Image (cartoon, rainbow, N blue to C red; front, side, top):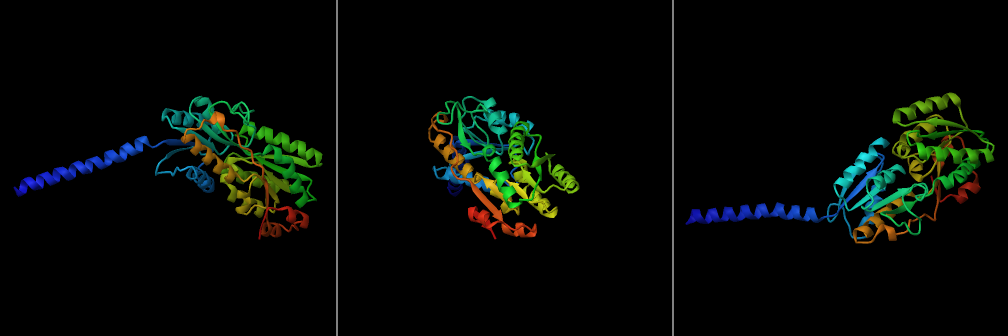
Length: 331
């Protein structure tokens, strides 16, 4: 009798143990999966992801609790993006989120015309073929358009204001990101011509090439450095800020991330805010809204951030008029 009871107990416990994994698997199976496609690596993308997850959370979705995120990082190898996008489509994810450049959403759009896509791009999404219009996207994609090209002239002007004696400005770009780089250089050259500045282009597509570019910069001795808003350069922002300081180069960047890492100054959109909005839109789509009905969001606020210790180390006196206009001065 005792043995029978023990056997029954073991059978009962075994059945319960088997049921728990089944229940967990069933919950995971019904949990929506968001594909996250990025041109860069996860290194240095922590703040962006935190902002994205906060936007999701505001719509009731917490990663690991009631939504799964499948990350696909191209590790700065842009030619990998089509295959990574195709992989997410095969997984039949509920939404594809793209970040870290303007190429990921194009790759996602080429891979699917049905799965919703939420993007963050720095150029006109209509021109990229992602949406029919900003107000009425009309297809399977929507997202955030944070300006970069439109701010080039303003950013170059602010750098010239901080370094009024500058005549020869080096411009650092990533030639691997061809379409974005060509448009950026066009805007820089137009703005520089209006300010009577001489522009010299330096290329870098890897960390080693960034190092090599600065060795060339040391030889050429420009008066200032203008860095493209490039996903690779964001990931390597500490390297860039350190090298600029070591070579005594006043440098301008497109977002505050570089200034927080020790860079001199930045002017542009708060990209963390853009990724937060991407999270918000992703949550709304998971709840049933359609990307075709969600207008592309454009920022209304641009921030000027100046790093005073870096300015002092470079021997620069920041004009009081510039300090008064700064949204934040890092002391």
